[in-house]
Amino acid sequence: MSLESPVLAIDPLLDDQRTRIVVCCGSGGVGKTTTAAALGVRAAERGRTAVVLTIDPARRLAQSMGLTELDNTPREVAGIDRSAGGSLHAMMLDMKRTFDEVVVQHSDPERARAILENPFYKSLSAGFAGTQEYMAMEKLGQLRAQDAWDLIIVDTPPSRSALDFLDAPKRLGSFLDGRFIKLLMAPAKVGGRAGVKFLNIGMSMMTGTLSKVMGAGLLRDIQTFVAAMDTMFGGFRTRADATYRLLQAPGTAFLVVAAPERDALREAAYFVERLADEDMPLAGLVLNRVHGSGAAQLTAERALAAAEALEDYAADSAEEGGAEGSDGAGGAEEARSGAAAENLAGGGIVDHGAGHADSRQSSRGGTGSTAGTTGTAGTDRADGADDADSTGGTERLAAGLLRLHAERMQVVARERRTRDRFVSVHPEVPMVDVTALPGDVHDLEGLRAIGQELAEGQPAAA
Image 1 (cartoon, rainbow, N blue to C red):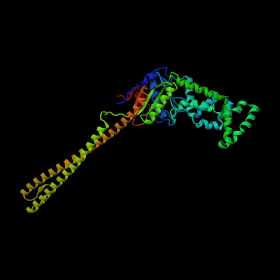
Image 2 (cartoon, one colour):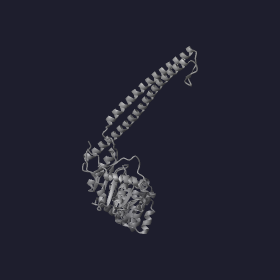
Image 3 (cartoon, rainbow, N blue to C red):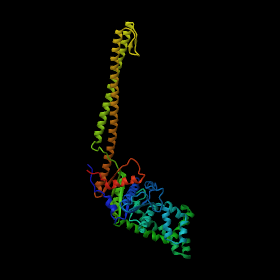
């Protein structure tokens, strides 16, 4: 028996006009991108004006939606059924471009140029730890501020930890409030000769060591970057806090995506608990790539027992067929020996090729009768051996299929045990199962099929 959990109703969630943001989160490799894309297609074809923001560098979303490429600008997806009045756009976060847009938008042209040309900024915007998660938050805030879509679906970054997305604003605040940044910002805040004096006296105590560790050029780049960004730091923190509050708002719904595997569900459990601690609205859990069987009543144990019985029967049949074949061969040899003796004794010659005698009529009739009888018996025995071989092959094939079924049922049982452990800890979390597919989803039809399963799927129950 499998533990029951509430059913996650996807269609009411997507149809509710009060739902403005859906965040798909979870550990890497569990199908967040496919889930987000399928939700976007289903929401658009049910009348919502939706946009899907993906941060997945594999770009599978573009392929699935028939787009040649995705970039930092939302692009409309062709092939969507718009009879209900909806539409779908998709985009992929360009981390550096988003950072550049923030700099240009929140600083004057001269300062923006100084920042964009700064070597330290180029490194920071291209791959600094945590930048991708923070820029995803920035882009979400931008899309929500535009108010061009009534539903935003976010595919969170493929981070090492699913919690990184929520931690990004706080990590940015810690970075901006750190002693090192404050020290580097101090000369710019003091200004004038006092600033130069401070830089010469205060910084001289640390620049020697830092220059050895970081290099003098890098230290100067950081100081220039911090001085140029001074007026923007407060804006970063303000927008991060605003986006964080947006994620806590009633119009946001978090969907935790997981696979029926121990590590993925452990990460999902951490995320569920974290969302509860942060007062963020959890809609439910999507359990992706769940295996099942159309013959679930045949257990793995019974299938293995039947396979062994069939294999034993096939082996016995093969042995019996071999014995009968040997007996048939011996009888045929005896008949040939008798015919030869008769020919020699009578002085006549039998034309075995034509099956007729060229000499005595009595010998011709007797020999023909004997040969015909012997040939029929030998043929019957040979056919019996072939039947035995054919039957054995069929039984071995059936045994192989039973073993495959047993392996599938063992996978099903293991997934149910893993799922039950999660449900036993979080019985209140609504769930929906999505069946494992034989291959990847590469088109809108595949996304529609996933959306249908999301809407109709039921969690494994007792």
